[in-house]
Length: 578
Image (cartoon, rainbow, N blue to C red):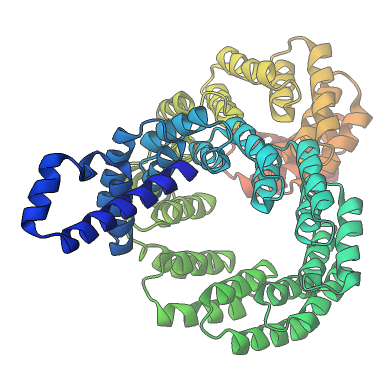
C-alpha cells in the first residue's frame, strides 16, 4: 500500500518539475539541455502511478470499467502489488464478477500475507460463494493482524452460528466482549448465539443485564427478552418486555408488532386493535407493518379485520401479488373458496407468488374433492417451467384420489428422481403401490425409508399393519407398530393399527381400547370406524357395532363390504326384537 502511494507522489513530482522546466527555459535552452542530456523527461506510460491516478479520476467520474482497466494497466507495470490486486478484486466483486475477483484477491493474499484488506475481501467472497469454512479461515487471519476490527468478529461469529457451530461462535463473541468490554454490541451477538443454541437462560441473563444498564440498546434488549418469552409461550412476560421497549423507543415498529403478537396469543383483542391503530398512525406508509398486522390477526382467526387491512393495502398497490396471495389465504381459511380462488387467479405467471398460488388452489380443491380444479391448477404450476418434486408429489396425490394409480406412480417416480431422499414422496409411492395391489413392492419402498430413517413412525406403522393384514410375521408386525406409537403417541392412525393387530392376535380388550381412542382422535376415518364395528361384533355387542358401521358409511357410503356388514347386523337385531 505504501509503495503505490510513493509511486504516485513521484509521478506528481516528476510532472510538476517537467512543467516548471518548460516554463523557465527558452526553446534554445531546452534544445541545448535536452541534447546535452541534463534533463530526462519521465516516461509516464511506464509509470504505474499514472494509471493509478487515472483510475481514481475515472472512479470520481463513475466510470467503473475505466477504473478497472486503468488499475489493470498499473498492475501490469507493478505485478507484485498486493494492494493493486486487492483494489481490482474489490471492484470486480462489486461488479458481480466473483470468479475473477476471487482469483485476484487470492493472488493479493499470497503476495502479501499480512494484507488484512485482502484477507477480509477474501472472506467476503468465500461467504458469497458459500465456502464458509474458508471464509472463516480468511477472516481469522485478518483478525490476527487487526484484533481491533469489530466487523471481523461479527463476520466470523455469524458464519459459525449459521453452521450451528455454536461453541465456536460463543468463543468468537466472548473474544469480542473481552476486546471491547465497554461496548454492548458483542454482548448482543453473544446473546443471539445462546438463543439459537436454545441456551435461553444464558441469553436471558445477558439481555436482562443490558436492559438493566439502561444503555442505548436497552430497548432492543427488552425486544430480545420478549422474543424469548414468546417462544416459551410466556405471553404476559413477553408483553411486559415489549411494552418496556416501546416506552424507551416509542417509534420502534418491531416492538409494537411483537407486542401485538403477545396480545393476540392472550386473546386481548381490544388492546391488540389499539396497538395496531397506534402503529398505523406512527407509520401510515409502512405497508409491510400493515401486512404483518393482518397476518397476526389471521393467525388468531380475526379474519374480517385481517381482510380489511389487506384490502386497504391493495387499494394503494393493486399489483402487489404477495398481498393478494395473503388475502387469498385469509379467505381460504374462512371457507370462502370462491372468493379465495378469485384472488389467487389474479396472480399471473411470472409474479413471485404465482407458483405458490397455484399450489394453494390445487390443495384447496383437493381437500373438498373438486378434482377437476385441483388437477387444473397443479398443471398450471407445472407449466411454470419449475422442476419441483413437491409439485409432482401434489399431482401424484390428486391422481391417487382419482384412482389413476399408474399416473400417480409415474408422478411420484419423477419426483423421487429430483429428490431421491425425500421420505414423504417415497411413502406416498409405497402407499399407491399398496392401493394398486402391489403389496410386496410397497413393502420394499417402506423398507428403503427405514434403511435411511430407522425411526420413521409412518414407515414402521405401514410395514407392521401391512404384514398383519397379510398374516405374515405377527410378532415383528406388533413390535414395529408399538415402536411407531412410542414415537407418535397421539397418532390416531397408529393407535388403530396397533389395536387391530392386537385384536387379530387375540388381545381383544386391549385392541378395543386402542381403536376406541383412535376413533376419538380421527372421527372422519371410515376404516377405523369399521375396525371398531368388527371388534364390537366379535364381542356380540351388535347395537354398538351397527352404530360404528353407520359411522363408517357416513364418510364412505359406497363401501359395499361395510354395507353388507351393516345389513347382516341389522337383520340379527331385527330377529332378536321379533
